[in-house]
Image (cartoon, rainbow over all chains, first blue to last red; front, side):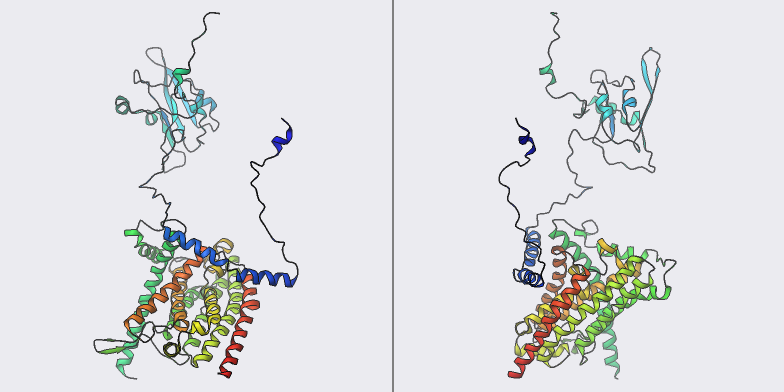
Length: 204
Length: 328
């Protein structure tokens, strides 16, 4: 394939050039343009268009607090921490990758070793005043533990509104009811992933 | 002067003041709704049913807002300017017959404060004084945008006022009187003046947009160029007075145009009265309609339009009218 094929940006040959007359330079030319514009009554076209729209009454307003636009499953709003489906315990293993990758340094994670000698998250907060909702934390998380939710209505009395781990964690009753929603955005397992999994070739 | 006449006049004045102050507020509701519908929006919806009490909420806001007089302004002039705009708009209404005369409890009421024999001249003159509101307010504000707006209002004023005066001259020549009642009565016998003076009608209508500072000629307080122009430094009810003056002016002009050109209230029947109100509503609607459709012109374009196009047409119209009257 030649270069021209890439350089030619015209998608189709249906383009037509708008017929724009040259700007009149002489006084007579300007006068003719005024007369032309006056008696073509182009102004009335604009009036007709807005009147037509008024009588059509085709309103596009979303009455926001009562009505809300649907948001996509990949929407990146305030974070959520998920629980394991099997045992209802936290998915987070405290690896700290989200803290490392966070480009606005808004995640702070602290871990300790609990009584069963397992790593446990002792401190986890996200500074929503700094967060730019880029989705890297959800993408990097190996356990799909931190994800983005759809809650975009936030209000706080200060800019540095922190969200603690417990607030982001799926509530137990919601978990018991089986209503935890998986995030479909960055880092999530794509649908029908099971069918695409191939067996590890052990033959070699 | 008899007492009954005095009482009647005072009542009329109070009624006109109250009705048109309220109408100015309700006018903003209509403006927002009409503009919204034309732009496929809903407009105010939350205060009251269909947002009908929005005007009340706005009034409460305007009345209770802190009245700020900035440090460097020329105090007395800054304070009097909005009063000039609002007062002249209402003073001009004294010579406008709002309805045909009717009988109330056996007492004949003429819904005009004073039928003076120079009615139309008086109305245009007093409305012209309204210019001093933006002019003085803008110059006293110690704000460059306000100053620009004041300069514009003076430039615009001398442009459109010539057109207003000259365009109205031809109908005055035909009617032979300056009283709006006489205009109305002339059109009962001789047909509407819009048919004999279509050019004058168009010119006066165009000039009315400049007179009230509505959109194609909304240069004096152009939001996207000079913020709110003369109103930039005003807050609370002082700004509200400018607002009431502007909308009252729109209503009064909407009464004057049908009175002069569209037969007014006709022979004074109930039907004629309602037709008159319908005509008035159309002209008020036209102010909102045009605002939704057309862009603003530049000040130099407005002056070009007024001096080089509309004024020659108005003069030619007067000459032709004069020649035809001489022949006939």
